[in-house]
Amino acid sequence: MPNPKRRHSKRRTSNRRAHDHLRTASLAECSNCHERKLPHRACPKCGYYNGRQVIDTGAKSS
Image 1 (cartoon, helix red, strand yellow):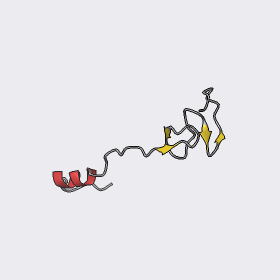
Image 2 (cartoon, rainbow, N blue to C red):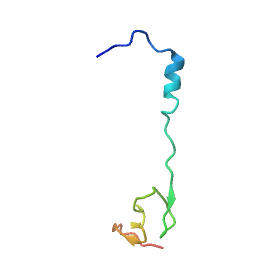
Image 3 (cartoon, rainbow, N blue to C red):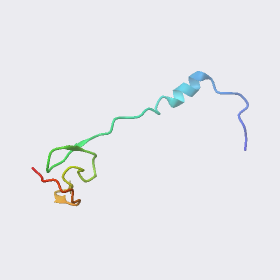
């Protein structure tokens, strides 16, 4: 396995790490209870996904 001959400069290292930051999660609105939820996932509050209930949460939908 080859090893680097010289170390990378601080600027080069920082430029590489510039895109490693965390991004805020994009949220979608639940079509049933209008709560914010992660897209392409069932709503954790009411249990609906794509217009039908897929998880029994025990909570009453509004």
